[in-house]
Each structure stands twice: as C-alpha cells, then as structure tokens.
Image (cartoon, helix red, strand yellow):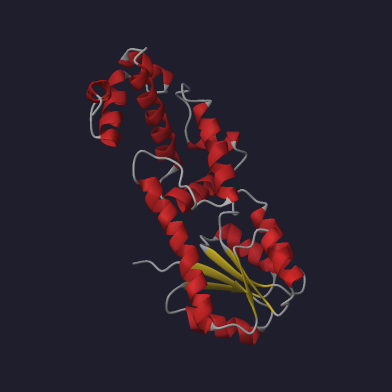
Length: 255
C-alpha cells in the first residue's frame, strides 16, 4: 500500500528533522525551509497534505496558505499550520485563509498524528463516494473550494455535452488549467480521470433523458456526445449495469 505524501515546511532545522523522523514511518516526506521553495515542491509533486510553520523568512505560513488556497490547482490540499502564536487572532487569521487545522507549539505528536489521519481520511471518504455510481455530491465532506470546483466543472461539461470533441484537453482549456493540473485535481478529489468524469456526467444526463421519455435512444446518444447509439449503449451498460432500454423499463415499472 502506498504511503500518503506530506510536505513539511519550517525554517527551524531541528523542528523539521523532528517532524520528519516522527512521520516518515507512515508517510512519504518532502521538506522545505520557506514558503517560496515549498510552492515549487507543490507544483511539481503529488502532495496530499501540507504541514507549515507560520513564522518563516521570505514567505510566512499565512502567505503560503493564502497562495495555495487561492489557486484552483492546489486548494484541495489540506494545510495544517503550526505556530508559537497562540493568540485567538492568529488562529482566526489562519482559518480565514483556508487552513484546515491550526496547532499551537509546543504540541503533542499524538495530536498531530490524529489531525493528519483525520484530514487524509476525509479525503479518502470523498474519493470513495465518487467511485460509487451514480456520481454525485458528498454532503458534509467537501470543502468550500471543492464545492466551487465541482460546480464549475459540472457546469462546463454539461454546457458542452453534445460536443464530440470534448476531452481532457478541451476541458482543461475551458477551465483555464493545464492538462496535468486538471488530472491532479480531479484524481485527488475523485480517484477517476477527467475523461471518466466527462463520460460519467454524459451518462447521468442520458439517464435523465431516459426517465423523461421524450427522446429516442439514438437522439439521447447524440445529445450527450456519443458518436453512435452502439457506443452509447456499451458505455451505459458498463456504468449502470443495464442497457438504456432496461433502464427505461425499470424506471417505468417503478422498481
């Protein structure tokens, strides 16, 4: 089983080494001594959680958190802020910037382990929810950033369903994201590929048309972007476990 990958950011070498030694048995670890260097690590690696000190040179933890949480490519990554600033104002500032947890120094290693496990577990629950058809929302699990991203991507795909050329490259262009960033973002959220997500939304819309009963199957296939009724039927059977005709019959019988 692959270990989750965590990025540790702290300008104090002793603290950085302590955290790395404490966590390396359970996680793959990247380290950085400042926020600017850490941004480069996030952009070029599959980071699943970030633990950052607040008071650092060049770019502090608040500035780093603000940049990560304002970037659609990375704002899904949970951030834990560690700081000796134990004032309520500092804590509120961190949380307002989008930090997922705020832990004061000195802290209990056990507390940190539990916080990390809980945040990663929440991401796993979201992935499991989206792996189970039919694809839908995950109430109570998604962050505000995830909700916004899902709304935008659903709106974009739904608005281009009948476009046979809609693929990951066109979707990335429409979302103003790079292909690699789109793959990373969707995979971190749903454990499926962008092409699978496009296909899923197409099939869910097709199911809605079938339930309405106003269109023939070949017409539905065209409206949701399949090149032929046969191709549509094969994909529908794979996703729903029944043919479009069987789906219609089941819904009409009230099963």
